Image (cartoon, rainbow, N blue to C red; front, side, top):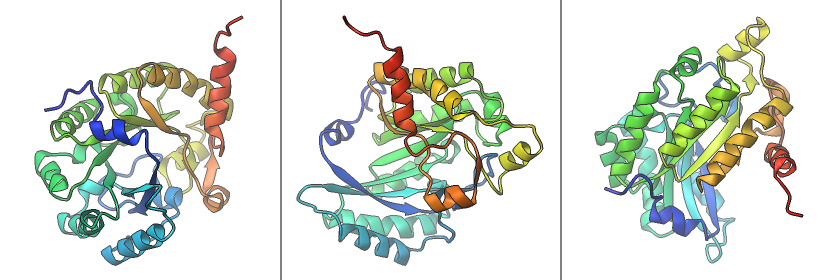
Length: 292
């Protein structure tokens, strides 16, 4: 069993190499809950479930554009709770990726899922399919925030899932959100500190956005939820970034990626900006003491 305080060797090695992600979006597939903020079909722009045939076509399309002499490729299953999918459907998709990995055309398989959709049986299967990385949507380590946003899991579920994933030696990513229903600066700081204790290989930080066809949209329209302004979101994220960087934990995304069409059609409110990361780092730079 690898120490939870040490990142995987794979993650250490790959930080120094260029690699390309082949994203395959599986919106809402397998997810047993409808979180307050979530409509993955709007966020990803994907409206249909992905089949094994679709996955193969996506991989082939991306590989045709990747110079394998300069880059290493990974297939990533995003957008849903992958390990909660029907095992047969799950394996159909994984088998396609595994075929390309065994052929040396890709070097990694990653997926995103929920903390309460992790078990020894599930992880045994992922190992057999040569999955290399698991990303957990944690969002908050405060149980009251998780309950208010209908996450369907607790902070204890996160701890349990992380412990299991570490036993199986997968690379581990954790996602958190700021500005959720019932959230605050203090709770966001608490969540960041708890994630640091879990020693992930990387994190993502997402300010909460309001999309149509979500419970959060209904709360917003009814006046019961006020999203963070862009300035508030950046000011909230700046100290979180400092904490993760001080702990040498890589932040691979800061701010949600939304297509231009989806931003126009379905994004109703919230601190969205295509260069959100730059705004946060501008705050950090201004607040940092300068040497004279």
